Image (tube, rainbow, N blue to C red; front, side):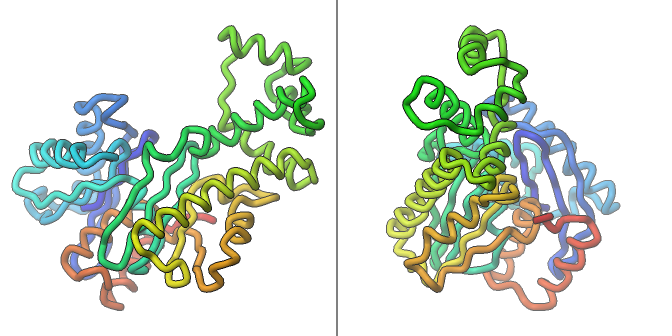
Length: 324
């Protein structure tokens, strides 16, 4: 059983050793740090029960459970979460990973690979050929964690333009229209006083759209954002002795689906010094990656061709192929 738990939802899939996907289950999301351990385990129980019911099998039929979870960032957390899952699933072999590792495994079967996840939040992880890995987690500054961070940068750019720190930006009109305010000062006053709560992730698409139209400030925001992510990948590759000319980088999350001046386009330009690097979009939903990590424990990191074929067929059947 593969489990992918994020703040929005908890998914579960059941696979057999031949690669057949027998079922999928889902429940609400949770992060044990913010929502509490009891709720996180409850949501895992609900999604796994749904998967077991759909597959018409009993808990005793499951050998291995791989749970990829938001909030699993430090070594001591893996130990804690493994213990809690063993209480939930007695007698099973348990593997706990950060949720971005599920996205990575669902995105590629390359032995040397990495992932940049940029959804509402964000993360970066790399793995080398010997299985060593590094996950940025809390090392990735808040101002570079996903759509919320980029939207916040767009908000700040409007304020900087208003007081003359930068040139004008067409983001001003877009953000004022979205918030219903008449000028940036009124928007800032209401925001700082708590009278208006702006969900910054909803401002992120404006940055891409205005960049596409030629707004210099919006373009610069994306270039700077992509530049920092690039530095993170290159630095981590050096840390893990990875040759980026023998490497696959998976891009996952809504920020890489935005129209216009794409973040992925900017990233690809930034890796021009590594002509053999492969940059791709993730193929499968992260929960499939969690299941594949379980199969890796049985086969190693190279699955047999017939197993891969059946996984592909199952993902089509259960709508587990990511829409790009």
